[in-house]
Figure 1 (cartoon, one colour):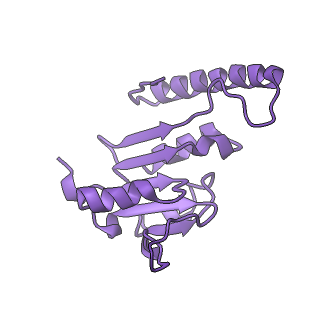
Figure 2: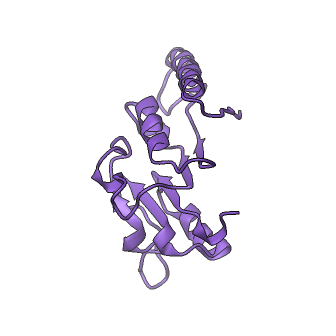
Length: 160
């Protein structure tokens, strides 16, 4: 239904592979694609140019999605699809960032896809005891996120 009018935001876009694929495989124009990241890690072509153009990238703190970059009157406005691949590992307040992402999601029918929420993990250098405590905290966060989204009237599906 949305076709080439879909607006896509990648929070923590890393090397920008997801957005480059959306452009190349789906034909979405760069003007409808935006990647944000705390560092510029965009992949580069053989000529040294970034594959994701500057106009579709912003150095940005993923925990400040309620800032002017995403104000309704900005050129970015609302998004039909917001994705985030493993970014929540790096956030101080993942639940707050999730709520802010919901605020810039187009309604009705917008989709928020978050991958790599750190459930039951052992980080490099982390002891098994620390990992067990982290897993409990991760599960508590997942329950809080699910409850908050349901209270807000959102459809929720956690996929493991």
